[in-house]
Each structure stands twice: as C-alpha cells, then as structure tokens.
Amino acid sequence: MPTGRQRYASPHGGSGFSGAAVRVGGTGQKNHRYPLVALGAVILIFVVLGSTIAMKTPAYESADEPSHVQNIETLVRGHWYGMDSRCEMNNRYCSGSEPHQAPLYYLVFAGWQRLVGVPARPAYHGPGRIPGPQQPTFLHHSSADLRFLLWLRLPNVLLGALTVLVTFFAVRLVSSDPWTPVVGASIVASLPRFVFLSAFVTNDNLVDFLGAVLVLLALRYARRPTAWRMAWVGFAFGLLVATKLSALPVGLVILVLPLIVEGWKRRAGLLAIGAVSAFTACGWYLIQNTVRYGDPLARAASVRYLIQVGGLGTILTPYVVGNSWTLIFVHVPQRILTTFWYQSGWDQFHWSWPVGLVFSSVLLLALAGLTGRHLNRRVLAILWTITAAGLLSVWIVAFQTSTYEARYVFVGLAAIAALAALGLERWKLPFRFVLPAMGLIGTLVAIQQNVLAVHWN
Image (cartoon, rainbow, N blue to C red):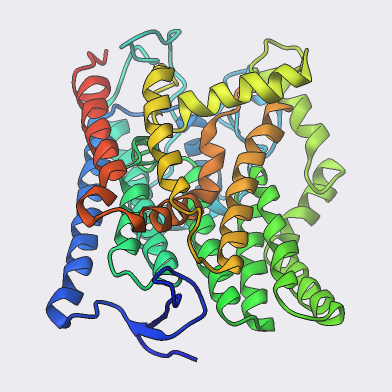
C-alpha cells in the first residue's frame, strides 16, 4: 500500500486506486508548495468574504436565524427546547419556529457560548415587514444584537472554512494531480450560496461540514475497506442525523460501501457495523423523540407544530401537494436551479433562472469531463451516491413543506466538487478555475448589491 504522501494513479493518467503510485507535486518541493499556497489563499479569501457578510448584515436578517439562535439560547439558559405552538403564538421566549430540528448543532454552539462566557440573550422578535426587493425584514436593528450575534456567526464562518479544507483532503485521496484538490476546494469556497450560508447562524453549516467529513471517510474506506473505517463512516452519518433529519437520504452510502468487498457474509457484517455506529451517534436523539413525541423522527408532532406557526409555508393549514408529477419534474428542478447558486436574506435576494442556468451549464461541462476517463469505479459510485442522496433530500422535503430549497443538496457539496474537479483534469490548469472564478465574481457582486448597498432600517 502507498504510504505517506503517495497517491494512487491510473495507468492511463487519470485518478483512481489502481496502477503505480506517484508522488504529489512530482517536479520538486518548490512546485509541490504552490498548490498548498493556493489552498491557503482560497481559504483566506473565503474567511474574509464570509466575515464581511457576517459583520455587515444586521442582526437576524437571514432566514430563520432568530429561531436558530433561540434554540441555542434556550440551551444556554439550561432548558431543553421543544415544540409548543402556544409559546410561539403568544410571542413568548421559548422555541421559535425551529424546535423540530435535531439538537447537535445547537448543543455545540451553546457549549461554545458558555465557554466564552457570553450571557444568554433572547432572540429578536420585534416588528417586521414582508420582505421585498432590496428591503429588510425587520424594521429595527440593534447594534448590541449584532455584537452578540457575531459570537455565533463568526464560528459558522470557521465551519465553512473547515468544510473547504476537508473537501481538499477528500479530493486529494482520489487524484494524483496536485491541483485537482485545490480546484475542488475552490468550487466549494466560491459558491455564493455557500459563502452566504456560512456567514449566518444555521444548522446547515454543521450539516455541510459533516457531509464533507463523510465523503472523506467514505473515500478512505474505498481505498482500503476495513471494519473500523466502516464504523467511522456510520458514526459520521449518525452525527448528520443528530444535526438535521433532511440528511437521512445520505444513509444510502452505508448500503453502497459494503458492496465494495467480496462475499455476502462480509458485506452483511460491514453493513451491521455501519448501522450500529450510526445508531451510537444518533440513537440518543431518536430515543428522546420517541419518549417525547411518540416516534423516532417526531414527524406527526412536527407537522402539528409547524402548521400552528406557519412553518410549512401555509397559513394555519396543512401543506398539500396538488400534482406530484408537476412537483417532481417542474417545481423542484426550478427551485434547485434558482436557489443552488445564490440566495440570501429572508429569501428576498436571489438570482434569476438564466444566471443559474449559465452556472449550471458550466458545472455540467465539468462533469462531462468524467466521460471516457479511466477513473476508479468505487470512487465514482461513492461520489455519485452521496450527490444523488443530497439531491433526493430536496425532493423528499418538497413533499413535506413548500419552503424546500437547494441548500439541502449541500450535504453532498464536497462530493459534487470532487466530481467536477476530477472532470476538469482534462482542462489546462488556468481554465480549471473557471467555475470558482465565476463564483467569486458572483459573490462579490452579491455582497455589494445585497449587503453593502441595502438601506437597512
């Protein structure tokens, strides 16, 4: 087995787990440092942009941020948040509109807030307005609220930077080209939607980080399948479930990974190890739901609560899908096209579908570069499974609420970036960064138009 900084390379010049081992860089220590320097620059740019958004956007001017903060503050005060519609309807400090969410993200940030000694503070629930173009949601903003919120927002920027870094290491496992991991990391770091998401308080940020970790662990397992590596994959999936239930479809990877080995007995054993490890990480949450709400996923209780607080995108009525086929083949693809690349604020800032179509076309061209390549089938199976699971989560959520968005796909963002980066290996080096360059320009334009140029009341 290759060791140290060695990488598996295809005898045909592509990436994979077969063939001769080659060293990253290949032409000396000096050239070897260039990709690492570029990675450092990518992460630095991401942190600067994310921090700018976090510091310049007034408190709670991001979708559902007050409710995410409220869950954290409830835990900081020593209470467990839960679903009580009377509490929200009476405008009392309690659970907000996100108490159905899994608790891991909120526990982590409540622990952070206690560690730094910041006192609990009620989330803002003052007068608001219906958002329109270039308009704020809340009529009043407090500088004290923003100073408090930065203690929670800036660590989310760090989570985004770690997601970029983990993506780099994941891609480096499957490519002998020293620049391909940098391209993969750059795709994640320059995606405008991801940059904006990382600047605010939302459990999506921990989901995206853990999704990247899952990709890394799954690719390590593919390199050398062992029981311990399968256990780590299962544990990462369990942490995802304990963070957000929309990540459940990613569990498909636990079904796919055992198929890499020979023999049904060994496959069954690895599947059992993955399942037990996942339950070890999230079983406490599923058991708690069963005790409190009657079922492990708390589905019925969540629907009842969200109807009362308008969390299903309806007004005090259940969400009903009129035409399933139209939803599947028209509405969901349209929503993915318009919200995958950029959306911010209380969803009042977004790009039109032609802009999304241009970005999506470039991504498809990058993925088309995978055709005809001698790439390892294990790698492709894992990356496509996680990508498909991320996309599937959007369709599943679309049958539960009208507020579904493409950000659910970001649990597989590292897998998408890895596939695109591998496809771009066919291109000459400067052109491999065309998608990150487009994303960086789009992010700068979005910051100027939807953060700096907005008159926040």
